[in-house]
Image (cartoon, rainbow, N blue to C red):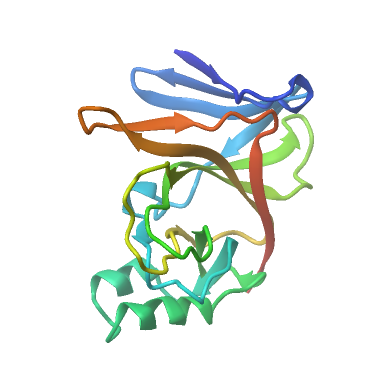
Length: 225
């Protein structure tokens, strides 16, 4: 089975995502941009977006809107599960202190995606998928950075939707793992939605249409050690 997906953007900005499956197993996954294929790279075993850690309050004042690359000695999800910190705020503060743009092959890399501070609740974030992609054409040796691609949904409260009266910072921590030496670019491809409710009280998510896909980017480097 071959699956092809693409965002609704201007033709010159269209990047096609191609996935080849056989009996439920993925044989190949890559991207097609301007007549050139780029291959997918196997992500570290620790990378599982279903185990991502979400928080909406403890990152207030710590993480600005954007992408934050974190380098720690161990998987921060383990520390979260084992309650190594007295408060949740201490946990996020320790990660903020380990933000970096240069790390080593011994470091455990994680990515925090933050929407920044909001004066109320009702703003959410959800990681849909993660993949690692080489940006080189398949017939050339590696030279360009490896892309860590996230597809993420942002949802805002619509008119009349009740929200909590408290400062929030919708963020998510995705543990990646140990990476090989080289240059990397984190890309966050964003889909935006507005939440409202119909007459029966069921939630309605309305996609915000844009001509150009919204993409956040952040670079970092892994050094051999």
